[in-house]
Length: 145
Image (cartoon, rainbow, N blue to C red; front, top):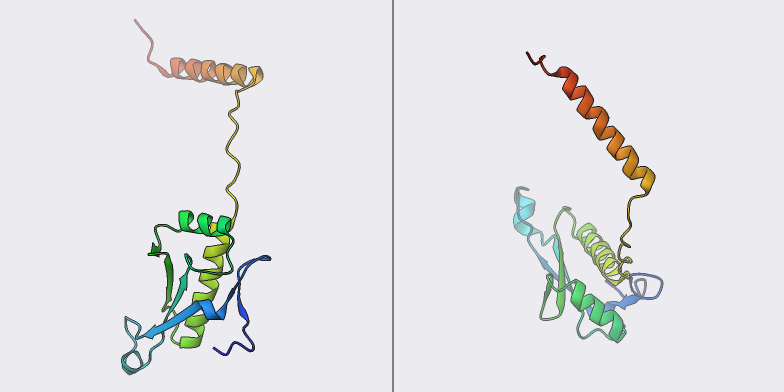
């Protein structure tokens, strides 16, 4: 990809990964496809070294390494796309997947849940409903002799 019309991969409002940090690998896709599958290198792998990226702040790098630890191999993130028949569409799919993955990993964690207690009214409603169900089930029983 020429860097003239693609300056980088825009992840969010504050982060753009430059094309110089992205590496592409191409190979043949798996699955059915006849003659085309045997000749065209349509599968695209996008490789980004998270641990050596110059665009990340130390805080962002730490968060990415922690959140994506299951997907990283020696600090390198690899995204593979082979769902399309055309290499260009697989490239676009890999770029979109990488941007979404990084944006999701950089999102700050949601605040922890504050423990709450049921109100007195809620407790009374629950107990009265239990009593009503008990009465209904008691009426269904066969009469005791």
